[in-house]
Image (cartoon, rainbow, N blue to C red; front, side, top):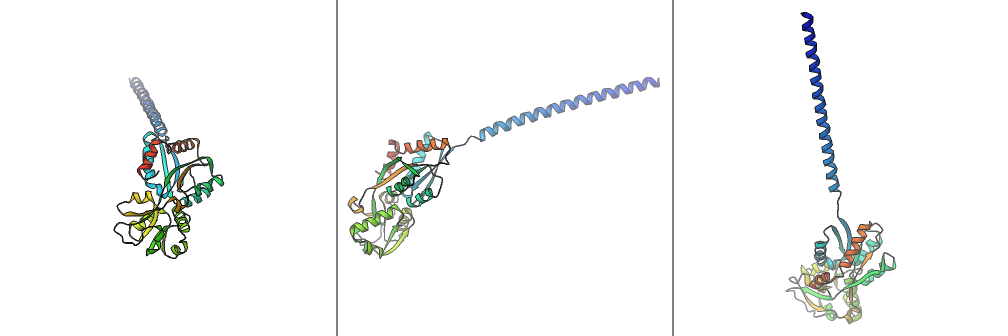
Length: 284
């Protein structure tokens, strides 16, 4: 009887061990299945995250800042995966940055002088440059401001003058006007507030810090509630047309998809759709 009881207890013990083993196996299977599922989900999420936009770098003259923002919006309507990064400053400053190795895909200058220098230095190929826009140089004063100045010829009658620097196309055009009118020495003897770019000159006159200033017609148009045009320089006074060339920069850092996007945007700037926007901002 005692032997039979021991045998029954041993059988129950073995059955318990078998049941415990099954439970461990099922738990392990469940964990493995969960691990596999999580790993799969993570992989899919990573694949989605790796999809990114193509970025291009466009250096533009300061006088193009407003219009180029609208141009980018129009372009992105049909090319949403192209991210356009603008760098707006004086064309002379932008030229120097390109020559020093700044990453740039397209250069949009306010003067042919800076573009020609980059072509000569092999930073831009001549066949990839288009003379796209024309602007005018104008003399402005704050709305409501008092001045005896009626044109470029009697500009020295002003108490002071806001003028872009010598490396800025607007400043270069202004100095050509002074030279062609034979008044360079008289103007340079004036109280001059020299701006780093044409935007700074526009701000100085808009804020009434200066009696008069020299900017582009499109700049004056952009703040017509703050400034008014006294006179527009003729082609004879300037000595040449005010041309804005745009060109593809030889960017060796650009990947193939970036180079393709830059080419496409460069061509878009020459379309009728883009031309309509430029004209709305006063460019020809």
